[in-house]
Image 1: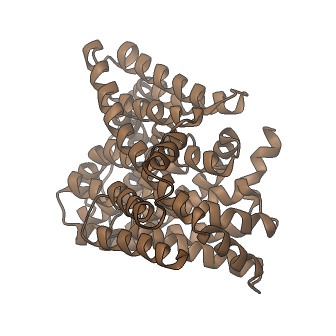
Image 2: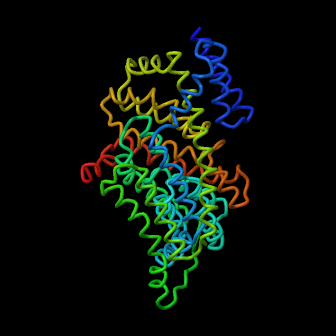
Image 3: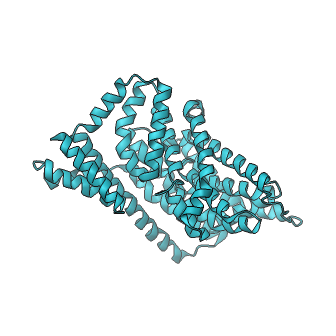
Length: 430
Protein backbone atom coordinates (compact mmCIF):
# COMPACT_ATOMS: atom_id res chain seq x y z
CA UNK A 1 0.00 0.00 0.00
CA UNK A 2 2.79 2.41 0.89
CA UNK A 3 4.58 1.64 -2.36
CA UNK A 4 1.43 2.30 -4.38
CA UNK A 5 0.81 5.56 -2.53
CA UNK A 6 4.36 6.75 -3.14
CA UNK A 7 4.19 5.78 -6.81
CA UNK A 8 0.90 7.67 -7.17
CA UNK A 9 2.30 10.74 -5.40
CA UNK A 10 5.50 10.93 -7.43
CA UNK A 11 3.97 9.77 -10.71
CA UNK A 12 1.11 12.25 -10.59
CA UNK A 13 3.51 15.06 -9.70
CA UNK A 14 5.76 14.20 -12.67
CA UNK A 15 2.80 14.02 -15.06
CA UNK A 16 1.40 17.38 -13.91
CA UNK A 17 4.84 18.99 -14.09
CA UNK A 18 5.35 17.67 -17.64
CA UNK A 19 1.95 19.12 -18.57
CA UNK A 20 3.32 22.51 -17.46
CA UNK A 21 0.94 22.79 -14.51
CA UNK A 22 2.31 25.40 -12.05
CA UNK A 23 4.57 23.80 -9.47
CA UNK A 24 2.35 24.69 -6.51
CA UNK A 25 -0.64 22.95 -8.10
CA UNK A 26 1.48 19.98 -9.20
CA UNK A 27 2.67 19.43 -5.63
CA UNK A 28 -0.68 20.15 -3.98
CA UNK A 29 -2.89 18.14 -6.33
CA UNK A 30 -0.63 15.08 -6.30
CA UNK A 31 -0.51 15.16 -2.49
CA UNK A 32 -4.27 15.69 -2.22
CA UNK A 33 -5.03 12.81 -4.61
CA UNK A 34 -2.76 10.49 -2.61
CA UNK A 35 -4.46 11.46 0.66
CA UNK A 36 -7.97 10.92 -0.77
CA UNK A 37 -7.15 7.54 -2.40
CA UNK A 38 -4.77 5.91 0.08
CA UNK A 39 -5.35 7.76 3.36
CA UNK A 40 -9.15 8.12 3.66
CA UNK A 41 -8.93 8.12 7.44
CA UNK A 42 -7.02 11.38 7.39
CA UNK A 43 -9.69 13.39 5.62
CA UNK A 44 -9.37 16.85 4.15
CA UNK A 45 -8.88 18.27 7.65
CA UNK A 46 -5.32 16.96 7.40
CA UNK A 47 -4.74 19.20 4.40
CA UNK A 48 -5.88 22.28 6.30
CA UNK A 49 -3.87 21.34 9.39
CA UNK A 50 -0.61 20.65 7.54
CA UNK A 51 -0.79 23.65 5.21
CA UNK A 52 -1.83 26.15 7.88
CA UNK A 53 0.77 24.76 10.27
CA UNK A 54 3.53 25.23 7.69
CA UNK A 55 2.65 28.92 7.37
CA UNK A 56 2.37 29.67 11.09
CA UNK A 57 6.03 30.50 11.62
CA UNK A 58 7.36 33.90 12.58
CA UNK A 59 10.38 33.52 10.30
CA UNK A 60 8.08 33.49 7.25
CA UNK A 61 7.02 37.04 8.10
CA UNK A 62 10.46 38.13 6.87
CA UNK A 63 9.69 37.01 3.31
CA UNK A 64 7.12 39.71 2.36
CA UNK A 65 9.26 42.33 4.09
CA UNK A 66 12.42 41.38 2.18
CA UNK A 67 10.39 41.32 -1.04
CA UNK A 68 9.03 44.80 -0.25
CA UNK A 69 12.55 46.06 0.45
CA UNK A 70 13.80 44.69 -2.87
CA UNK A 71 10.90 46.30 -4.73
CA UNK A 72 11.50 49.64 -3.02
CA UNK A 73 15.15 49.65 -4.07
CA UNK A 74 14.47 48.35 -7.60
CA UNK A 75 11.74 50.93 -8.35
CA UNK A 76 14.02 53.79 -7.37
CA UNK A 77 17.39 54.90 -8.63
CA UNK A 78 19.73 52.94 -6.36
CA UNK A 79 20.86 50.50 -9.04
CA UNK A 80 21.42 53.28 -11.61
CA UNK A 81 23.61 55.28 -9.22
CA UNK A 82 25.61 52.21 -8.19
CA UNK A 83 26.19 51.32 -11.84
CA UNK A 84 27.33 54.86 -12.66
CA UNK A 85 29.83 54.90 -9.79
CA UNK A 86 31.18 51.44 -10.56
CA UNK A 87 31.64 52.27 -14.26
CA UNK A 88 33.64 55.37 -13.37
CA UNK A 89 35.86 53.32 -11.05
CA UNK A 90 36.56 50.16 -13.09
CA UNK A 91 34.93 50.80 -16.45
CA UNK A 92 38.27 51.29 -18.23
CA UNK A 93 39.63 47.90 -17.17
CA UNK A 94 39.39 44.95 -19.60
CA UNK A 95 35.96 43.54 -18.89
CA UNK A 96 35.35 46.43 -16.51
CA UNK A 97 31.68 46.91 -17.36
CA UNK A 98 31.06 43.17 -16.94
CA UNK A 99 32.78 43.33 -13.55
CA UNK A 100 30.46 46.25 -12.73
CA UNK A 101 27.47 44.01 -13.50
CA UNK A 102 28.58 41.27 -11.11
CA UNK A 103 29.68 43.73 -8.42
CA UNK A 104 26.43 45.69 -8.46
CA UNK A 105 24.51 42.40 -8.40
CA UNK A 106 26.36 41.51 -5.19
CA UNK A 107 25.47 44.88 -3.65
CA UNK A 108 21.85 44.70 -4.76
CA UNK A 109 21.61 41.13 -3.48
CA UNK A 110 22.31 42.50 -0.01
CA UNK A 111 19.19 44.65 -0.36
CA UNK A 112 16.67 42.33 -2.03
CA UNK A 113 17.33 38.73 -0.93
CA UNK A 114 15.95 37.53 -4.27
CA UNK A 115 17.58 36.30 -7.47
CA UNK A 116 14.92 37.43 -9.98
CA UNK A 117 14.68 40.86 -8.31
CA UNK A 118 18.44 41.27 -8.64
CA UNK A 119 18.39 40.31 -12.33
CA UNK A 120 15.47 42.65 -13.02
CA UNK A 121 16.92 45.68 -11.21
CA UNK A 122 20.54 45.38 -12.34
CA UNK A 123 20.02 43.71 -15.70
CA UNK A 124 17.64 46.41 -16.93
CA UNK A 125 20.55 48.85 -16.70
CA UNK A 126 23.54 46.62 -17.43
CA UNK A 127 22.37 44.62 -20.46
CA UNK A 128 21.98 47.78 -22.61
CA UNK A 129 25.18 49.26 -21.10
CA UNK A 130 27.16 46.12 -21.90
CA UNK A 131 25.77 46.01 -25.44
CA UNK A 132 26.71 49.67 -25.99
CA UNK A 133 30.25 48.90 -24.75
CA UNK A 134 30.70 46.25 -27.44
CA UNK A 135 29.71 43.13 -25.49
CA UNK A 136 27.64 40.43 -27.13
CA UNK A 137 24.03 40.87 -25.98
CA UNK A 138 23.68 37.15 -25.26
CA UNK A 139 26.80 37.23 -23.08
CA UNK A 140 25.41 40.24 -21.21
CA UNK A 141 22.05 38.55 -20.56
CA UNK A 142 23.71 35.29 -19.51
CA UNK A 143 26.02 37.13 -17.12
CA UNK A 144 23.08 38.89 -15.47
CA UNK A 145 21.18 35.60 -15.15
CA UNK A 146 24.16 33.88 -13.53
CA UNK A 147 25.09 36.75 -11.22
CA UNK A 148 21.45 37.13 -10.20
CA UNK A 149 21.87 33.92 -8.21
CA UNK A 150 23.94 35.96 -5.77
CA UNK A 151 20.59 37.35 -4.65
CA UNK A 152 19.93 34.23 -2.58
CA UNK A 153 23.53 33.66 -1.43
CA UNK A 154 24.53 37.10 -0.18
CA UNK A 155 22.55 37.91 2.97
CA UNK A 156 19.79 38.67 3.60
CA UNK A 157 18.37 35.72 1.69
CA UNK A 158 14.80 34.48 1.42
CA UNK A 159 16.15 31.00 0.62
CA UNK A 160 18.08 30.94 3.90
CA UNK A 161 14.91 31.87 5.79
CA UNK A 162 13.18 28.78 4.36
CA UNK A 163 16.15 26.50 5.10
CA UNK A 164 16.49 27.85 8.64
CA UNK A 165 12.81 27.16 9.25
CA UNK A 166 13.05 23.55 8.06
CA UNK A 167 16.43 22.79 9.64
CA UNK A 168 15.57 24.64 12.87
CA UNK A 169 18.74 26.67 12.52
CA UNK A 170 19.21 30.30 13.51
CA UNK A 171 18.51 32.27 10.34
CA UNK A 172 20.85 35.11 11.32
CA UNK A 173 23.71 32.60 11.66
CA UNK A 174 22.92 31.41 8.14
CA UNK A 175 23.03 35.01 6.94
CA UNK A 176 26.50 35.46 8.44
CA UNK A 177 27.67 32.16 6.93
CA UNK A 178 26.59 33.25 3.44
CA UNK A 179 28.82 36.33 3.21
CA UNK A 180 32.16 34.75 2.25
CA UNK A 181 30.67 32.10 -0.11
CA UNK A 182 28.77 34.90 -1.85
CA UNK A 183 32.03 36.77 -2.36
CA UNK A 184 33.69 33.58 -3.65
CA UNK A 185 30.97 33.02 -6.27
CA UNK A 186 30.97 36.70 -7.24
CA UNK A 187 34.77 36.77 -7.59
CA UNK A 188 34.68 33.63 -9.77
CA UNK A 189 32.14 35.26 -12.12
CA UNK A 190 34.20 38.46 -12.25
CA UNK A 191 37.34 36.50 -13.15
CA UNK A 192 35.49 34.63 -15.90
CA UNK A 193 33.99 37.85 -17.28
CA UNK A 194 37.43 39.51 -17.44
CA UNK A 195 38.97 36.45 -19.11
CA UNK A 196 36.25 36.27 -21.78
CA UNK A 197 36.43 40.03 -22.33
CA UNK A 198 40.18 39.84 -22.97
CA UNK A 199 39.79 36.94 -25.41
CA UNK A 200 36.92 38.50 -27.37
CA UNK A 201 37.98 42.12 -27.16
CA UNK A 202 34.88 43.23 -25.25
CA UNK A 203 34.81 46.65 -23.62
CA UNK A 204 37.83 48.04 -25.42
CA UNK A 205 36.53 51.64 -25.32
CA UNK A 206 37.26 54.13 -22.56
CA UNK A 207 34.82 55.55 -20.02
CA UNK A 208 35.23 59.32 -20.03
CA UNK A 209 35.38 60.92 -16.60
CA UNK A 210 34.94 64.66 -16.11
CA UNK A 211 36.54 66.71 -13.36
CA UNK A 212 34.92 65.96 -10.02
CA UNK A 213 32.51 63.48 -11.61
CA UNK A 214 33.77 60.54 -9.56
CA UNK A 215 33.25 62.44 -6.30
CA UNK A 216 29.74 63.49 -7.28
CA UNK A 217 28.89 59.93 -8.32
CA UNK A 218 30.17 58.62 -4.98
CA UNK A 219 28.07 61.12 -3.00
CA UNK A 220 24.97 60.25 -5.03
CA UNK A 221 25.54 56.51 -4.59
CA UNK A 222 26.38 56.72 -0.87
CA UNK A 223 22.86 56.03 0.47
CA UNK A 224 22.70 52.96 -1.77
CA UNK A 225 26.20 51.84 -0.80
CA UNK A 226 25.22 52.20 2.85
CA UNK A 227 22.18 49.93 2.47
CA UNK A 228 24.10 46.61 2.61
CA UNK A 229 26.16 48.00 5.50
CA UNK A 230 23.03 48.92 7.47
CA UNK A 231 21.48 45.50 6.87
CA UNK A 232 24.67 43.60 7.72
CA UNK A 233 25.19 45.68 10.88
CA UNK A 234 21.69 44.68 11.95
CA UNK A 235 22.53 41.02 11.30
CA UNK A 236 25.88 41.11 13.08
CA UNK A 237 24.69 43.48 15.78
CA UNK A 238 22.50 40.92 17.49
CA UNK A 239 19.01 41.59 16.12
CA UNK A 240 17.02 38.68 17.47
CA UNK A 241 15.08 37.73 14.34
CA UNK A 242 15.25 37.97 10.54
CA UNK A 243 11.84 39.67 10.62
CA UNK A 244 13.31 42.67 12.43
CA UNK A 245 16.21 42.82 9.98
CA UNK A 246 13.71 42.72 7.11
CA UNK A 247 11.67 45.52 8.70
CA UNK A 248 14.81 47.68 8.94
CA UNK A 249 15.55 46.96 5.26
CA UNK A 250 12.05 48.10 4.23
CA UNK A 251 12.19 51.30 6.27
CA UNK A 252 15.69 52.15 5.07
CA UNK A 253 14.77 51.47 1.44
CA UNK A 254 11.71 53.71 1.61
CA UNK A 255 13.63 56.51 3.37
CA UNK A 256 16.39 56.39 0.75
CA UNK A 257 13.96 56.49 -2.18
CA UNK A 258 11.49 58.99 -0.68
CA UNK A 259 13.86 61.38 1.09
CA UNK A 260 17.34 61.11 -0.45
CA UNK A 261 16.71 60.21 -4.09
CA UNK A 262 13.03 61.14 -4.39
CA UNK A 263 12.63 58.65 -7.22
CA UNK A 264 9.59 57.10 -5.50
CA UNK A 265 6.62 59.23 -4.55
CA UNK A 266 4.51 58.67 -1.47
CA UNK A 267 1.59 57.41 -3.54
CA UNK A 268 3.91 54.80 -5.11
CA UNK A 269 4.56 53.19 -1.72
CA UNK A 270 1.15 51.52 -1.74
CA UNK A 271 2.01 49.96 -5.10
CA UNK A 272 5.24 48.58 -3.64
CA UNK A 273 3.34 46.84 -0.85
CA UNK A 274 0.62 45.62 -3.22
CA UNK A 275 3.21 43.99 -5.48
CA UNK A 276 5.03 42.58 -2.45
CA UNK A 277 1.75 41.03 -1.29
CA UNK A 278 1.18 39.39 -4.69
CA UNK A 279 4.72 38.00 -4.95
CA UNK A 280 4.66 36.85 -1.31
CA UNK A 281 1.37 35.04 -1.82
CA UNK A 282 2.90 33.13 -4.74
CA UNK A 283 5.84 32.10 -2.56
CA UNK A 284 3.64 31.09 0.37
CA UNK A 285 1.30 29.03 -1.83
CA UNK A 286 4.34 27.02 -2.92
CA UNK A 287 5.41 26.70 0.73
CA UNK A 288 2.00 25.32 1.70
CA UNK A 289 1.81 22.88 -1.23
CA UNK A 290 5.40 21.69 -0.76
CA UNK A 291 4.83 21.13 2.96
CA UNK A 292 1.80 18.94 2.19
CA UNK A 293 3.81 16.95 -0.37
CA UNK A 294 6.64 16.49 2.14
CA UNK A 295 4.14 15.43 4.83
CA UNK A 296 2.78 12.65 2.59
CA UNK A 297 6.34 11.47 1.91
CA UNK A 298 6.99 11.38 5.65
CA UNK A 299 3.70 9.62 6.44
CA UNK A 300 4.39 6.93 3.84
CA UNK A 301 7.84 6.27 5.30
CA UNK A 302 9.73 7.49 2.23
CA UNK A 303 11.70 10.09 4.16
CA UNK A 304 12.69 7.67 6.93
CA UNK A 305 13.58 4.96 4.43
CA UNK A 306 15.76 7.31 2.39
CA UNK A 307 17.54 8.57 5.52
CA UNK A 308 18.21 5.00 6.69
CA UNK A 309 19.48 3.89 3.28
CA UNK A 310 21.77 6.89 2.84
CA UNK A 311 23.09 6.63 6.40
CA UNK A 312 24.07 2.98 5.88
CA UNK A 313 25.54 3.48 2.41
CA UNK A 314 29.26 2.59 2.39
CA UNK A 315 30.25 5.95 0.94
CA UNK A 316 32.98 8.31 2.13
CA UNK A 317 31.74 11.74 3.31
CA UNK A 318 33.47 13.57 0.45
CA UNK A 319 31.78 11.32 -2.11
CA UNK A 320 28.42 11.65 -0.37
CA UNK A 321 28.72 15.44 -0.59
CA UNK A 322 29.58 15.16 -4.27
CA UNK A 323 26.52 12.97 -4.90
CA UNK A 324 24.31 15.35 -2.90
CA UNK A 325 25.56 18.30 -4.94
CA UNK A 326 24.89 16.40 -8.17
CA UNK A 327 21.34 15.54 -7.04
CA UNK A 328 20.62 19.14 -6.01
CA UNK A 329 21.99 20.53 -9.27
CA UNK A 330 19.79 18.20 -11.30
CA UNK A 331 16.76 18.97 -9.12
CA UNK A 332 17.48 22.69 -9.49
CA UNK A 333 17.13 22.34 -13.26
CA UNK A 334 13.63 20.87 -12.89
CA UNK A 335 11.99 22.13 -9.68
CA UNK A 336 11.81 25.48 -7.92
CA UNK A 337 14.01 26.11 -4.89
CA UNK A 338 11.28 26.12 -2.23
CA UNK A 339 9.97 22.70 -3.28
CA UNK A 340 13.52 21.31 -3.24
CA UNK A 341 13.97 22.48 0.34
CA UNK A 342 10.79 20.80 1.56
CA UNK A 343 11.55 17.54 -0.24
CA UNK A 344 15.30 17.24 0.33
CA UNK A 345 16.07 18.88 3.69
CA UNK A 346 14.22 16.25 5.80
CA UNK A 347 16.12 13.52 3.93
CA UNK A 348 19.60 14.99 3.63
CA UNK A 349 20.00 16.92 6.88
CA UNK A 350 20.08 13.85 9.20
CA UNK A 351 22.61 12.22 6.87
CA UNK A 352 25.04 15.15 6.82
CA UNK A 353 24.68 15.60 10.58
CA UNK A 354 25.64 11.95 11.05
CA UNK A 355 28.72 12.59 8.91
CA UNK A 356 29.71 15.43 11.25
CA UNK A 357 28.98 18.24 8.78
CA UNK A 358 27.72 21.51 10.21
CA UNK A 359 24.03 22.12 9.36
CA UNK A 360 24.89 25.79 8.82
CA UNK A 361 27.59 24.91 6.28
CA UNK A 362 25.27 22.43 4.58
CA UNK A 363 22.60 25.14 4.39
CA UNK A 364 25.03 27.40 2.53
CA UNK A 365 25.94 24.54 0.17
CA UNK A 366 22.24 23.97 -0.57
CA UNK A 367 21.66 27.67 -1.21
CA UNK A 368 24.58 27.86 -3.66
CA UNK A 369 23.25 24.79 -5.49
CA UNK A 370 19.83 26.36 -5.82
CA UNK A 371 21.31 29.70 -6.89
CA UNK A 372 22.97 27.84 -9.76
CA UNK A 373 19.62 26.21 -10.54
CA UNK A 374 18.10 29.65 -11.10
CA UNK A 375 20.35 30.07 -14.15
CA UNK A 376 19.91 26.59 -15.68
CA UNK A 377 17.19 25.58 -18.16
CA UNK A 378 14.43 24.59 -18.44
CA UNK A 379 12.97 26.24 -15.30
CA UNK A 380 15.72 28.67 -14.30
CA UNK A 381 13.72 31.71 -13.27
CA UNK A 382 16.65 34.10 -13.73
CA UNK A 383 16.92 33.03 -17.37
CA UNK A 384 13.32 34.04 -18.05
CA UNK A 385 13.85 37.44 -16.43
CA UNK A 386 17.04 37.94 -18.47
CA UNK A 387 15.18 36.97 -21.66
CA UNK A 388 12.49 39.54 -20.92
CA UNK A 389 15.08 42.27 -20.35
CA UNK A 390 17.26 41.49 -23.36
CA UNK A 391 14.56 40.47 -25.83
CA UNK A 392 16.56 37.33 -26.69
CA UNK A 393 15.36 33.73 -26.91
CA UNK A 394 15.68 31.33 -23.99
CA UNK A 395 17.99 29.14 -26.08
CA UNK A 396 20.46 31.95 -26.75
CA UNK A 397 20.57 33.21 -23.16
CA UNK A 398 20.86 29.65 -21.82
CA UNK A 399 23.74 28.88 -24.18
CA UNK A 400 25.57 32.02 -23.07
CA UNK A 401 24.93 31.30 -19.38
CA UNK A 402 26.14 27.67 -19.38
CA UNK A 403 29.90 28.48 -19.15
CA UNK A 404 29.12 30.79 -16.24
CA UNK A 405 27.12 28.02 -14.60
CA UNK A 406 30.21 25.81 -14.94
CA UNK A 407 32.26 28.51 -13.19
CA UNK A 408 29.68 28.65 -10.40
CA UNK A 409 29.82 24.85 -10.05
CA UNK A 410 33.60 25.09 -9.63
CA UNK A 411 33.06 27.72 -6.91
CA UNK A 412 30.47 25.40 -5.33
CA UNK A 413 33.07 22.63 -5.08
CA UNK A 414 35.47 24.99 -3.31
CA UNK A 415 32.76 26.08 -0.88
CA UNK A 416 31.62 22.50 -0.26
CA UNK A 417 35.05 21.14 0.64
CA UNK A 418 36.31 24.27 2.44
CA UNK A 419 33.75 24.64 5.25
CA UNK A 420 35.81 27.35 6.93
CA UNK A 421 34.60 29.70 4.17
CA UNK A 422 31.09 29.39 5.60
CA UNK A 423 31.97 29.10 9.28
CA UNK A 424 34.85 31.55 9.74
CA UNK A 425 32.70 34.63 10.35
CA UNK A 426 30.52 32.74 12.84
CA UNK A 427 33.48 32.66 15.21
CA UNK A 428 34.00 36.40 14.79
CA UNK A 429 30.34 37.34 15.25
CA UNK A 430 29.42 34.66 17.77
